[in-house]
Every structure is written in C-alpha cells, then in structure tokens.
Length: 280
Image (cartoon, rainbow, N blue to C red; front, side):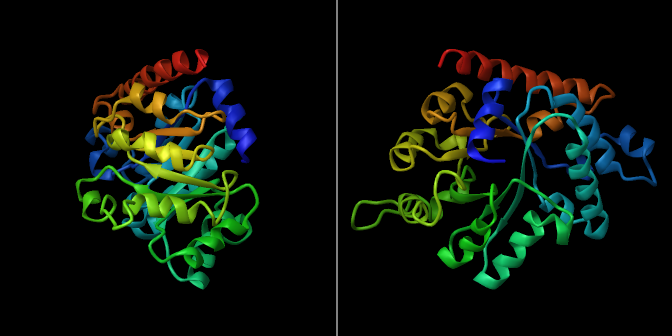
C-alpha cells in the first residue's frame, strides 16, 4: 500500500486506528480456550476481534512475540490470521511488529520473510525495525516497492530514557539524531517512525524534523496516552499518523461478549478520530 492509498483509506474510514493483535494466549478468556481446545485458539480469537473492529480500523499490527513464543503453532496462527485479513473485502494496512535489525545480509532475509510472499507466504505492508546498527541494517527493507520500514525512535516504555533522550554536546538528543540521520535513508513514501503516545511533549519536535512522514503512535489506551493531544500534534497533510491500541481493545473484557466489547472500544476511539478528521 503506497502513501496515497493509505491517506485515502484514512479519509474514507475517518480513522487512524491501528489495532495491535498482541494475542497472549494466557489472556484469552478461559471459556473460549475450552471451546476451541484442540484447535487454533489464537486464530479463532483473532478472527472474532478482526470481524468486530474492522469497520473502525485502518490497520492491524500483530506483535510477533506472541506468535514466535509458541513455535510452529504460533507461526501457523499468524499465517492464518494474515490470510483471514486478506480475505476480507476491506482495505487494511498490515504491520509486522517484529523490531528486526541486523547486518545487511541478515536484514535482507528478514525483509523477504515479511514482504516476499512467494518465499514466506507473508505479504505485510510494513515492518518495525531497530536502527541501532545503522543504514546497512535498514536499507534491505527499503528495496521493496510499496512497502514501509517503521523505525523505532521514541518509545513509551520506562527504559526509553536510558538512551533515547540522552543529550549530546551539540544539543541534540539521541532520538533527534536518529530522526535526522534515518530520514536520509529512505523518504516519506517508505519510512515511518515509532513515537510513543506517552511522549506527546516531544511530538512537536518530531514533527519539526520529519513533517511529511507517517508516525506509528502506540501507547493510547492501556498505557494512558492522550488521543486528542496526539491527533493535534501528529496530524499532517497526509494524515500522517497511525494510532495503535492493543490490550485496551482486544482484551476489553473477558466475558462472552468480548468481541462486542472490543468493537465498542474501537468505535469509541474512531469516533474521536472521525470528529477530528472531519474538522481538518
């Protein structure tokens, strides 16, 4: 999906909601695990969530840790989940939240794993990447047309301040150096940045450095980021933001109406987004 298609999708759905499929099997309600005992519980749960929130979401973001940790069974759950999303007659942007980053030849193989469906069976639109090893660890992901690299820059976890906000003698913080340097590797048509919603006080500075890029913004929902503030600070001429919520939606409750609860939570966020987008 290219930049114009993503923008059109945002304007058509009046949403920038990305739903994180961080499907921890241990958080799936007990009654549901019993119902699908012997089957693919994670996939069946994802199906219910996808159907419930698809009217309100423009993107899905499986966090690969929750699939890789279950070995081959987890990979099968992920593949069936992605195939199910592809089967829906509804455009959606799909992100592999993999946080990869290695020397060039290894990154090339990672890129094929997520982007080259002829080899891996996966056809994600984007993958999250750690930039610590520099340009040669990121550039292989940029070789695929209409695919996106989402670079980790300013995250919402407590340990982010160990490095990301470190001050250098020239006045820049580390996250600012990452933005300035990595923005030269690709462009606003193939590169996004992860900026945590709990870092909204720094979002204005991010927009000064990368005014035209898309931002993937986690941290709204369970982590407490302010949705309205993020919309106001992050929006640009292309929309320019995808706001992720995971646990607050997919585990909105543990009752038999969990899918309806997920839909209600997604609709609540999308309604705020819709009002904001309509006013632009």
